[in-house]
Amino acid sequence: MKTSRLERAALIGGPILALVIGAATASIDDLVGTANVGIMLAIIVTLAALVSRAAGLTTAITAALTFNFFHTRPYHSLRISQSRDVAIVVLLAVLGLVVSDISAWRRRREVKTARRDRAHEGPETARALLAETHPVSLVWPSVVGTIMDQLALAECRLETSVGRDRLLISRAGSRSADGDDGFVLPAQGAAVPVVADGTTLGYLVLTPRRDLGALWVERRVVIALADHVAIALTYTGHRHETKAVHDALEHPGEVIG
Image (cartoon, rainbow, N blue to C red; front, side, top):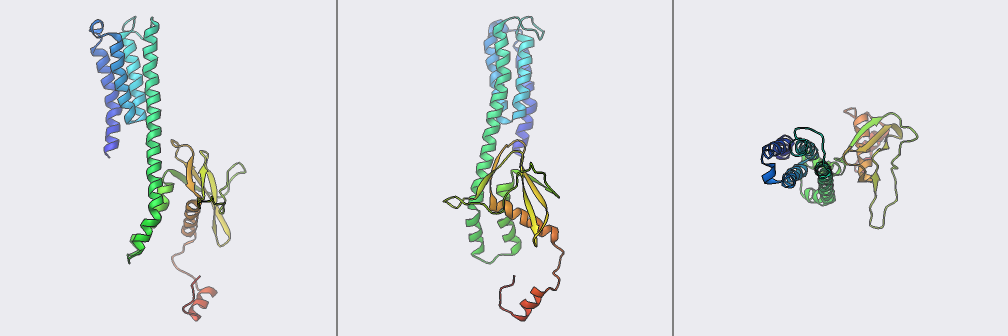
């Protein structure tokens, strides 16, 4: 909540502050100096870009237009007659773009790292929770949360069929020496079959969020999600009496399969 408020404040306040400073220093341009005005606007653009990409871009555009309008000859016009002024205007625009992209990349990396760390701590958290008796309603969300931490940055949908150009995620892959079974989920996404009782119900298509590009995930997490979808699609609320149930009743104490 605090982050969204800060982003909204930067998105609105950044351009307004750039416009106010650019206009207020127009009458004292000879005293302040054009270069110093450009530096002040650059600082505002940088601060806005550190908050969010949208704030950085809007502030950079506003700062560039404001500087051009109030501090370049001919004044009160968007035309520029001096190459030095052209360089400052271009610098303000490029600065917002570059700093915004760097800040967005850093925030994406921090989110990925935080979720990966929580996912790695998942098994130990589950063991500690299961060391004592707890309601299933408490254990289940904790266990499923491990999957969510790894896939929270991805989107998914169910399709009845997929084209030949769609990459398929194998349900069985080769593990590395340290037991890692991860793979890179490409930006265009990939599909994993949703199977129940040997029947393919469809294909779960996973894609990284649009602002993230490729995403590293573990195969077993994707397969677990597909299996959960299969359970949800085939769940009827009760079990029919089948030969397996009768066998279990006739041989108590055996493993129920």
